[in-house]
Length: 403
Image 1 (tube, one colour):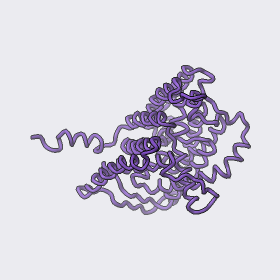
Image 2 (spheres, helix red, strand yellow):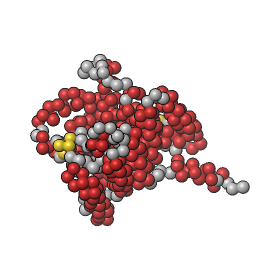
Image 3 (cartoon, rainbow, N blue to C red):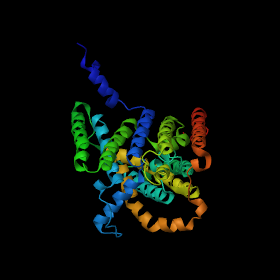
Image 4 (cartoon, one colour):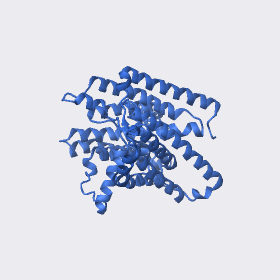
């Protein structure tokens, strides 16, 4: 009889939970799940989660006249976000990687500030790294291109600041860190046991709670898998924009490119065929999903603000969610800042901002309207190819890398 550590079940468990998945595998699976979300109702988005959470916080506190806020469990994005956090928690528990990680006060402050900046950027620019970019590019949105350029500019500026802080003011982020509930040796066996119990509950719970609403049920189930896959693969859009300017490593950019390529294929089929649009005007409605009126300046400015915030916080909209699930307190502060600022920005900042910008700076640009479907896809493939060439060249030469 073979040793238990060489058995088939042990090897299967080790494949999923004994080591981190390749990030590009995570990108492929996440893109597939995103296509599923599109087929259910709407492509993946990150910032609407925080908007809903923030509205419910203010509703509870009786502030800003948000009595009509939809409860989190009845809101597709609020629920998706909760299940993404829990799905990441399941992944961390099953792999014995869960721990409450409390950083120095300065790091928690950066998490909060980064979250506030991401809220401003996503509401002013109409889009975050997920809804505006990881869904926006596959949705054939022209504004998504400029949003991505903004992310790159913001990431570069934020990295410059962080390098300055490390050299000139290291005490701002130094201090004592505390780690609680980490798995140590055989004593951490409670984590996978709790993970199995939690995943069983989370797979059954949404079906019972929302048995009359299949959209919410599917958003909950897909959200669970989104968080799980993000945690196991450590998929990170922030790294994709930060690493070329920091270490030069190409792993994260390549993973995002893989997700974009699969997404472009799936979204284009859905939009071209008008799947789900069998009603008057339905085909056009399907075609314009995840194509926001932010081309080009609005997306560029909002993306820059968001890019600064995500690098300072250490995670973008979805990166914050899955890191919250594995117990990183800095990202809980990021999520808090995002949630508290987003409703305020929508209510008091965005209306004036949209009036200030001229109409040419905030158009809804659906690329097939200008280039046809094949031309739009070809344009995006050329852009992704150029990005690939740049990151591989930069990885080899270190021309734009700080380390």
